[in-house]
Length: 404
Image (tube, rainbow, N blue to C red):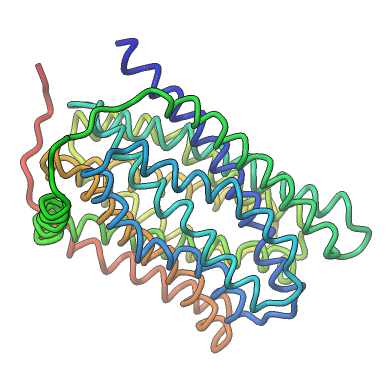
């Protein structure tokens, strides 16, 4: 047991500081920084979404690569990006450079995300739902802390509206958190892992491609991943436009905007392990279905509210819905796939996850520019509701509810 818990605890610690760093650089700071640089709604959505576009291209190959060369080596690449990239924001003076840096910064989660999940799936056995949920909950505490801390730094330092110096302060703190994650990981990675030896480059490449083909050809993996992707369509939209809506429409301050995002993450953290354990016992599909409905209804309610406390309650409901979906979807994908392809499976899952996450702010920005917040959010909510019957009909799997 100690051999499992020690690396698991280390992974959680590394993940906490990595996610803290990334959250500080993202919401609510990033959309407000883009607004400061003169970006309109479409441009703000693009700036928030572009880092997730990176994951679309790199998560699947990163996960598959970890199946071949080992998890720890692949993880280190992502953690170096976590540590270095926040400091590059100090050179940003215009919107174009911000977009370039955001795209490169996306390599951090693109490489680290699926590989760390594959490590947990490797050791979880029959408790994939529970352990993946615990891991996710512990690591995204960094998101919970990062969002309000970033908003607090801006609010406390700015007399009227944030200046360039205030934004730079947040990114320095983000860089310190990223460096902490890397230093802890270097100690973890000092222990060698066992990787298959004696394979030629051609054999490794063949295994790399065969793993990808086997995973992506399973429609159950694709449909389940799409549920997570659609749910993250709304998550990405909220990351980009909840701070803007809160400050410019609802009349809240930057700290309150950060709290709204933080309380949503808190609701997800607290409920995710419970939902993961429930999915191990009773099945994944009912939780995913219920979560999609909760997310759709709460997301659609946000643009009808202006009161901070009502918005907070709605954010909590959305957080519960997100927990229902995310606690079960990754575990369901792992259930379907063979153990030797866990990295590839998590990479496929993460790629579709990121397509939704990247498309969310971009789609929301286009819709808000054409319509308004209300109709834009309602259209996106409808997409979630329509996906539910497709998932119910398209994913058929008999899960074990009891394990010896």
